[in-house]
Image 1 (tube, helix red, strand yellow):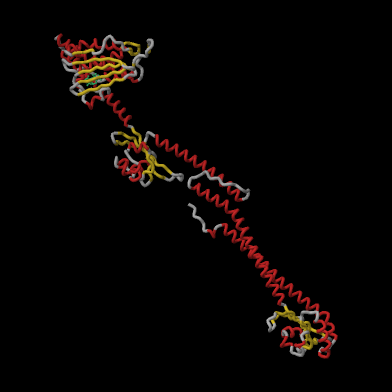
Image 2 (cartoon, rainbow, N blue to C red; image 1 turned 90 degrees about the vertical axis):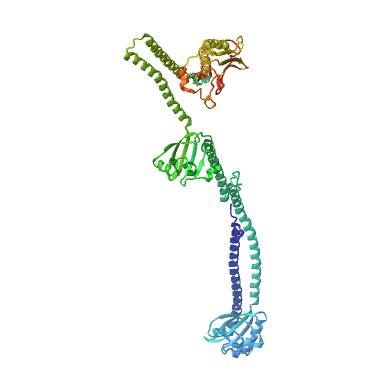
Length: 605
Ligand code: ADP
């Protein structure tokens, strides 16, 4: 906010004051000069007048020689002249006695008493002298003396006295006129000063006001450029500055928006911590990962949030770790695994400002690594069991020289069964690998799913019968549900699900197989009332090698790969497979496959 300057110290008033003082000083100087010149001129003209008056007469006075002897002639002369003169004239002899005077009252009296003494003295010593004085009546006068010289001797002086009150009157009148002129001039100066100052200050005030609005973020301000002078240049520079500032700020704002969008949409969490361990920035992902609110970030320090998760994540610790470059760590929080990478960030002077921390959710990666490890362990374990059996039976056969054909045959059957198990396992693993790498060849045809299902059921009928189980076909065997499928693979899926139902259902149990279609999909439901699967395990049956009861499943010849292969085959057909189960109650497997498009037969490989 701009602090408004006091009125009297503003440029406008200063300009007006300067103009005022300039005019005042100039006029005063001129006035004093003119006054004194005028006075000097008037005095000079009086003096000249005196000189003129005296010059004509003084010669005749000189001719008189002794003045006292010619008193009367001189008095007559003076009276004659004084008729036409306003000045008073006195002739004073060398004894300072007034021997002739235009004013008869002065006759015979001492000049020293009535006239100016000092100039009389000077006049009698041969000097032309003058002096101003004031008569006892208060009238200002100018006195001047001219010596009368006769035969190189000063015989007396002619003293002239003139009333100079008119000179002072003129002076006073001139002063009044001059002061009046000065007042008028000063008023005009004030007005002009005001207008001139206004023409300077209005654009400056305009620029100032607009700059103030700009400081509040309003960049729509444009200053009118009214002239080509410095103020006009200031206005156009202001407009240029505004444009550049606007452009730069919008560029900065664009960059900021971009950065904000990147930070907001970043999957990884990002934290910036200053050197005091305060979090100065946290993006949305970081807040989600660490279950933080904006208030918590503002209130809590980095150590209060991250330091408590692990000692390795304490601010001092990470600061120390990234002294020589970026560093990283892994931490576990809220069931997730996070990889945390951090490094110092610096300001433009290459000074450390804080630490930037990138948090990556590596839970999936970790899971995948665990799965791979489990997979290798599972495969090894699955192969090891039959291999151990085969090894021990062959060793027994070789070492003990068994001659009993019955025992040998039973041993060989076991070895054969284990070899079969191994080869099935390897076959299934190879199929999984082909499915994973999309290398499985598909022979899809438009087929009636009911026929495929019926064939699969036929294949397992005997097994079910052996366990005294009822294998019910609930569906209408004559209906047609056309689907585009790879017959062998879908048969493999049905067989797997049906065998599981038979395997995990007790003797005398019941298995219902249903099939129907809706608008878009074919549905196959295989439901048993077998041992079922507990709620917390049912979602895992599609995992590789996952078996609910490991020993029992292996005993039944299961590899734990069947359902995961089935899922991949069904998904390859754009369908889905689901399993619902209740422990001790039974299991329901639902398979959904898209119906074939209405027209024609398509062969798709
Ligand atoms: P397996 O070859 O071991 O049967 P599957 O992938 O086909 O492997 O099945 C995975 C596990 O799911 C089985 O080991 C079994 O524990 C469980 N299971 C599958 N079907 C059923 C079912 N109908 N009833 C009970 N458990 C089942």
